Amino acid sequence: YMLVETEVIRRVRELGVPTPKIFEVDVTRKEYPFAYQLMEKFSDSDINFIYKEGRLETSSIMRQLGGHIATWQSITANGFGPFNTIELSESGRLEALHKTYQEYYYLNLDRHLDYLVSENFITGLLADEIRKAISSASACLELSKGCLVHKDIAFWNLIGRPDSIVSVIDWDDTNMGDPVDALSLMACYHSWSELEPLFDGYTEVRPLPDNFEIRFWLHLLRNMIFKAVIRVGAGYFSRRRDFFLVPSGGSGDNNLKEITLSRLESALRGLEGTFEIQDLK
Image 1 (cartoon, helix red, strand yellow):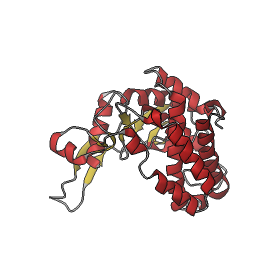
Image 2 (cartoon, one colour):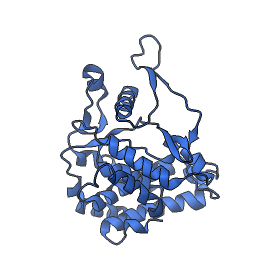
Image 3 (cartoon, one colour):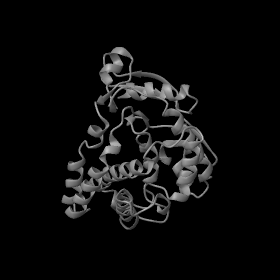
Image 4 (tube, one colour):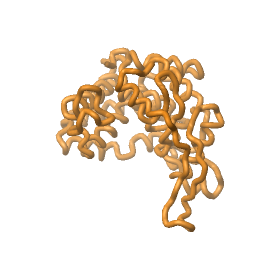
């Protein structure tokens, strides 16, 4: 997938969004028994480090990021989900692997919910409620065309300074998806007061899509399910306070677990119509 990451970074950079320079990439394993990618190194830190120290001009950074997201969403391709590396290597074209967006959205959903139930992270009743809520709103997943989605957008994947983004990094999960997905990903970590300038920056470049709120909750819910699976499986809830996901002054067990559950349930209530985006804490 280094080929995809390299091509996407090149195209995003051409639009004026700051991304790392890629000097060379080779996935053939013909000359060396490994794939490699030579990338620009930055002297600045990731923005999450500055954020946790309390030095980040969060509103300014969010507005910049919203504009960047809206800008790279002008990149489109056929299909949905991860890109086809064979097609890219043979023709130079970006094409995604799934025929419909619903197919991509539902991929492993039942498996993820069953895992969270088996690990006693959520109850079976809650899992069934989640399935029902998603099913009732699934018509909003019928997209005719996707757009470029970073798919792991977060402060730790931004290099920068307290008042500016120097580079958007870590594009190895990038895919063709729903434009609302990128905004919902930031909602996995931030309150409405921090998200509002993100939306403002986005709408300065392009309007919010139709059925925005329902699609927002659909994607926040799906993203939180996926992140819960990772956090449970990798033991994130027992990490110390210096772990990148743990809020300042907290620990994995008494903060990150509570935050994960709370955000998942907020997304569900939002999809059910009993919770507003402005209520996100």
